[in-house]
Length: 168
Image 1 (spheres, helix red, strand yellow):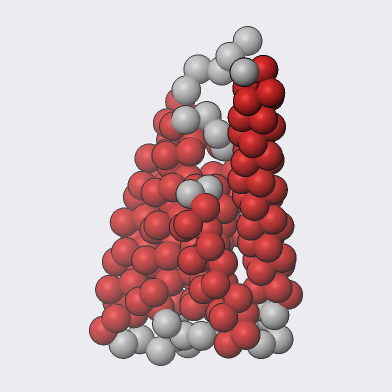
Image 2: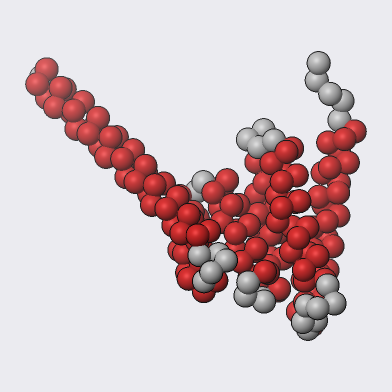
């Protein structure tokens, strides 16, 4: 009886270890894919997009919301600044915003993280797609409207943060 219990415990421990190892290897693979997408961002947008789309698929499967938001941000930046698909830009940044908003509500990210998302990603791409030099097609106007909605949501967030009493 003791031998059976010991064997059962060993099997359970091995199974848990295997699951943990598989999750860690997926996280390592995902991190490497994201790094490759960022590496090729400036030099080969198409190759960067391949890596980013693969990272998106793995991030969704992993259920890691923070990583999903990072990948959506990368895809938004990539489509906006490198590939001229403004209609996809706003969608990806909006997906990232919704996840970050949820994570902030769960105290998993800081206001500074939110501010960096806005100032380093949303604002520059919005300025790019709304500039005179950018090709203004119907879908660009639609993307601009989406960004204006996103700006409104982010403005509400920042005004709440400014008006929130400071903890002492």
